[in-house]
Amino acid sequence: PLDPPPPFPPEIVALLTSSVLCYLSTLADGAPHLSLMNFTYCAEDEKIIMSTRRDTTKFRALLRNKRVAVLVHDFPAELRQRAAT
Image (cartoon, rainbow, N blue to C red; front, side, top):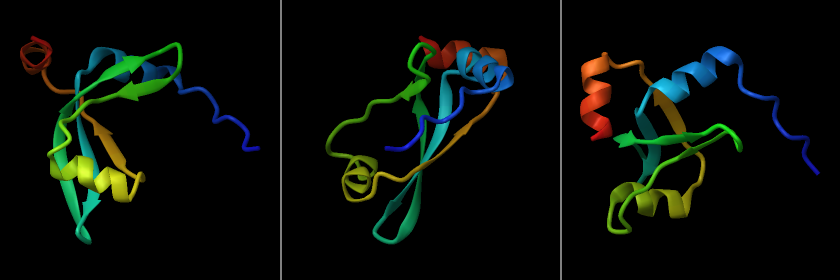
């Protein structure tokens, strides 16, 4: 069995708990597909939770290939508030 990954550093946890938007990159039809996503960080499990409809390009891409890249950006506070509502 694989060893569990080390815990996130405090700086990463701070970013994840203060942000609500990220970019999710998948591979769709051989080309990168980038989506702006809302997310929730579950600190107890160290997981980032996102949701999407089943009729989206990203959902179909994830069914074919579960490897992704995620970029969490520290957007200005007013954008974080707007995204959270």
